[in-house]
Amino acid sequence: MLGGPGPEGRGRAAMCVWGRSGAACGAGAEVVRAGLWKAEMAKLLQPPPKFLPEEWHIANKNQYHRAEAQRSRSERLVAESQRLVDEIEKTTRKSQSDVNKKLEQRLEEVRFWKKELDDKLEQLVYTTEDLLTYQTRLQNALESLKEPLHITQMCLEYRDKRIGIDLVHDEVEQELLREAEVIHGVMALLTRTLDEVTEQIRLNRSAKYNLEKDLKDKFVALTIDDVCFSLNNNSPGIYYSDSVVRVEPHSVSLEDWLDFSNTNVEKANRQRNNSLALKALVDRILSQTADDLRRQCDMVDTAFQMGLKETKAARDQLAAHLAKAPFTPVPAQRFWSY
Image 1 (cartoon, rainbow, N blue to C red):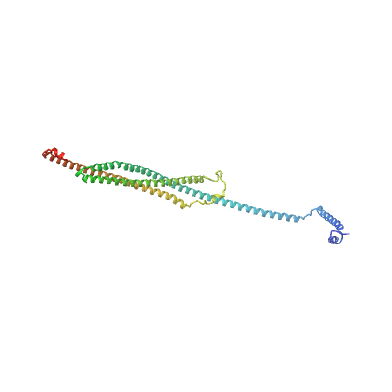
Image 2: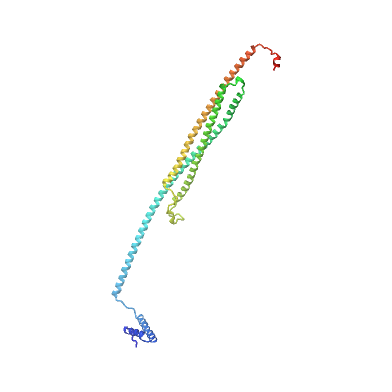
């Protein structure tokens, strides 16, 4: 026989595996497995073990202590979580308050620069309009000089038709030549001044373009910051976004932002001051050239009057001598001899 399921039986079963034929060993293994299964089923059918009251109390006490420890840890975790929530809420409210103050300061700065740009733009526009008026005055002044120059040149041409000894370089001709020179000089001066006024108008328009572009950017920034300043925790459509905290690659610093607007304001001031100085210069030039032309015109008129007086006196003197001279007929043959 193979024996029971004990060590001795297992040893004999092993001997059967190595010492007997395959069929006999297979049958013995089935018997062993059946015995093991019955032993396990017997254990399962046995009633559970019973504990003593002392063991029950100890088990309950241990379970109570474990539950108490878990509850304490939970309470500490809840308290720590609440502390973190309160701290984060306090930090968040402080950060929101700081941001609101900075936004308010930013709005004040943008409004200040916007007003500065508005004022400079308005002043520059008025100054440019005045320069356009001065440009028209210079153009009209140049146009009005063409006729006096033409008259002076005609007078010189007519006086060149004098005959004989009367073709004299007298004071009248000198004053006429001086008048033509004065007119040419005045025209050259007015042309240069007109070019300066035209260039100043171009510079004013360039500064005006920069002011308008800066004003447009300030208006956009002011609109955005106004919306941001009006937002709060109860505003609709508020959600967290990771990308809003990054710095844009093309953004500028506060110093660059201030320098940009300040440069535009200074450029507008400089062009406005240059325009005012140029307007004063144009007034002086127009007044001075008008006086010079009027003075030279008076000199020409005086020379003409003196020349006419001298010519008339010479003519009257010759006429008087002619009247006193005896009349002698010329023989006809003298003319025939030619």
